Image (cartoon, rainbow, N blue to C red; front, top):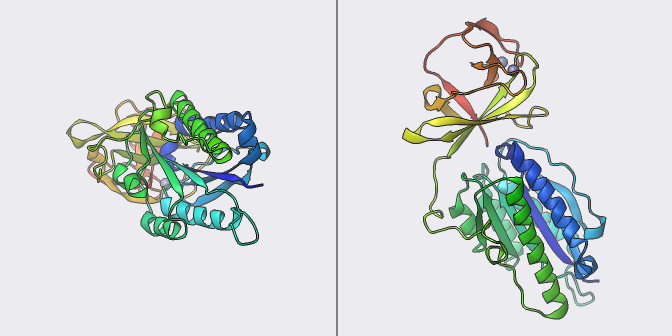
Length: 333
Ligand SMILES: [Zn+2]
Ligand SMILES: [Zn+2]
């Protein structure tokens, strides 16, 4: 039986921390449930899920939609889009049956790429390799949130879309569009119906094409992530700052983490403490409202406000705190 291989390539970088990662996971589960109800998709549909953060990983190897379970997704530090394309190339090479003189292979794969950030590796090399092998495979790229460089996604595919919100509802609607698109491509393979695969047309406004202005390179990141640790519970969290007025970054969220992220604390460059406004900070684990920066682990550590003594549970540093201007390591994002 010829299969229609669908590859879903999803960003699990640390900037997805919080609701976004759960919402994306639930959205994929909905996608799978919906596909399992379509008799034509059951017949020919095969799906694979590849995640990319600090590295790329096959979460679900290409299999019939009936045999798939979506595993939980682990966040990691970095947005390795190039590695994702490397892995996609090797998965298509090894799992998709090619048409030869003897056998009729699978249909041409379709790829959905979902990302919320800017690549932190050499994405062009990985992408070029993929295109060299598969020049005509169609890719739909969805940029989520407000820190996406659409000039990059546009280089990858003309089928580039924007999804501004990263709520459960938005991801739900996005995956409804993906479902509709997969069903339409399947029907067209089986019956020769016309393909409806424009996600913007399939969506009721949640997903749209980016404007020309949005497609300009964004250069500097619009957000900063700093790894952090709770001094009382030794648990990890992530502090998210968003660029506000006057170019300063204002605290926008703290995300408790189950465990230290793979690659967490790796430096994505420096930022001066004076560029960060931490008003309103509260440790998500213990409620402390003060913090200091540990120069050894490159992490913020929660503390009681106003104290002059710091103890870092990460590396054991213990000493008097100093005020003043200093640089912090940004996390990779
Ligand atoms: Zn704490
Ligand atoms: Zn430390």
